[in-house]
Figure 1 (cartoon, rainbow, N blue to C red):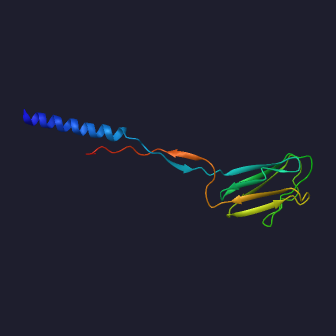
Figure 2 (tube, rainbow, N blue to C red):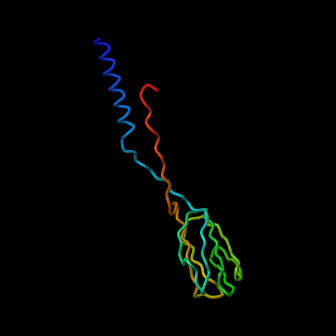
Amino acid sequence: MKKLLAVAALCVLVLTLLISAGCGKKTETTTPITPTSSVIKIKDFAFDPAEITVAPGTSVTWINEDSTVHTITTTTFDSGEIKPNEQYKFTFGTPGTYDYVCSIHPSMKGKVIVTGESSSGTVPTIPEPPTPPGY
């Protein structure tokens, strides 16, 4: 009888430990989301937004919603003329700051900052449940 009670007590103890291990507060970690594209609108003789920060490998698309031709001109690339309702796309591979201007309208200026890190947004990572002893 004592052996039966000892085994029962041991089973209750093990069951209690397993339940309490599964009921503890789980911490969540996050993994950054890296957008693969961004859009800048050209409207009313301005770039909107005028400055963005992106991760390497991000494609930026400028969409001309204005009534006249514009350009995206940097020391790295030149879009050529972008007519109304047309767009220009460039993929930024190297971290750095890219100041640009419309060569037709030099008062129009913008900036793309390419960081070595991911940009906005996170997705929760769900932790693995504990493995019960004996498995």
